Structure formats: structure tokens, C-alpha cells
Length: 326
Image 1 (cartoon, helix red, strand yellow):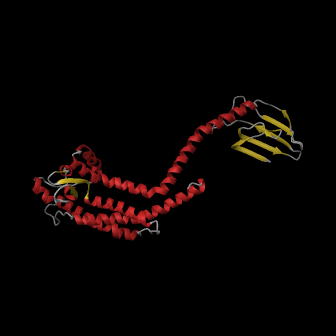
Image 2 (cartoon, one colour; image 1 turned 60 degrees about the horizontal axis):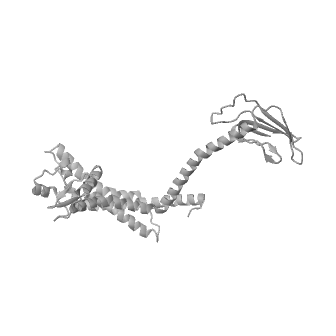
Image 3 (cartoon, one colour; image 1 turned 90 degrees about the vertical axis):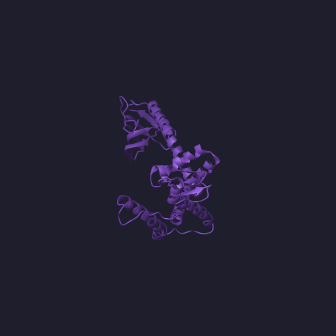
């Protein structure tokens, strides 16, 4: 005895050992008895998820005796829903599923293929991104020196929300010095060097050179992420590199930069709010900015890249088992 209730099923009536009638029904009931007599009743067709009924639907009853030679004799009790209606509905549903399901399958397959490609080439993608990210700020002063000021100013504008771009905390190219403290800039140009937008907008000139679009600390951070990523790509071929523990990451990467940059920020803020207070404005040195930024970049790669490698290996193995991709 087989029962179907509130679900999409395929009902087949055998004619000479071949399916003669198939369709989706919402409720069906098949009862087999000892005399090999089979009774099938289709009460409605499922047009969609809400089960819309056909007009003037009546039960379709097929009662057949199935002898050993499997040549059933079929008599119709009632036939308000015709075979043609059932087959037409089946074809409509199949066409509908091919349309929506095909797009979904193709999209899912495309996503899986990209995930498989990325699991094999993620390190190349990461290194390319950081090369682009740290390369453009260095390209900006080069373009200024070559006279391509329009493109260079676009780069400065794009990176402005990502970095303060203060000239006293930036590197200068094509000038007599690589860095200029705020005092020297004040002496050279008579400008009030501070944290204001006018100071940030100064990109340099032929006399002092042109500043990079990222500050000294950011250049060190992203530059070391790029160099460490390239080094990681060479080392992982011969050995498995363990991830840096969290406590070591905080001690090596976070704390030095937090102490250096944090004290500078707090000292300048207190001096601004309370000019006659116990703390005076403080500017850290370019050397400390570079060292602390480099340690943060190195520690970040050491912590994250081995973890990313493990995750990508799992993705690659999973998709290989599913699709056999190499």
C-alpha cells in the first residue's frame, strides 16, 4: 500500500509496460490488494506552489487487472480530467523548471568554478591586490614629476579617505630629502603645518619633491604585507607554515604600533584641548613609523595567510569531490 499526501509526485499508469500517463498530483492514493488490482485516483493537478485546482475537476479512476503477461485492461469510471490535460500540465511544469532552474544551476556552477579557481590562486590575487594598492600611491609622485598632474591628482583624491596624507608624515620623492618634519616645512614655505585640510592638500613641488599618496606608516604596513606574501609563496612550496598565535600577533604586531601611534594621538589631542596642560604635542619619528608599520604588516600575514591556506584547501578538496575538477 502506497500513500501520497500533499506532495508532488509522478503518477504513471502502465500501458504495455510503458508509462502512458504521468503528471504531478497533490494528493494521490494507490492501494494494491491480493488480486493485483490497482486503483489510482488523481484529485487535482498542482499548477504552482499554492495548488490551484482545475475547473470542474472530478476524480479520475482507473481500475485495471494486471495479469502475468502485464497487459492491463483499463475501464474508465469517470474522466473529467483528460490525459491531454495532465500531459500538457506536465510539459508546462517541466518547461518552467528548465527556465528558472537552468539559470540557477548555471549561476551556481559559475560561482563554484570561481571558488575553485580562487582556492588555487588566492595568494596570487592577494599579492596582486596589495601590489596595486601600495603601488598607486608611489606612482602618484612619479606622475607629478613627469608632469602628468591630472592622473596623479586623481590618485591623491582616491586615497584621501584612506589616509590623512599629512606631508610631515609622508615620504617625498624627487627632492633633496625623503622626509620633512613639520618644522622644516614651516621654514621652507612659511605655512602653518598642522592637521588641517590645507596641510593635507600640499603634495609638494620641484623644490622639495612630491609626497606619496599614503603616509609613512601605511606604506610600511602594506609594503610588508606584499613582501611577506611573496615570501610566503616561496616558503609554502617546501614546508607548512604554522599560523602566528594571537598573543604573539598582539605583542609583535599590534602593541608597538598602538604605543607609538596611540601616544602621538593622545598627546596631540590633549595639547589641543588643554594648551597649558601637562602634555605637549608629540610627533613620532619616521623610523618608528616604518618599524611599527612593518611589524604589523609582517605579523598580519603570518597570522592570516596560513589560516586562509587551510580554508582554501578545504574548498578545493570539496569541489574536487563534487565535480572532479583538477
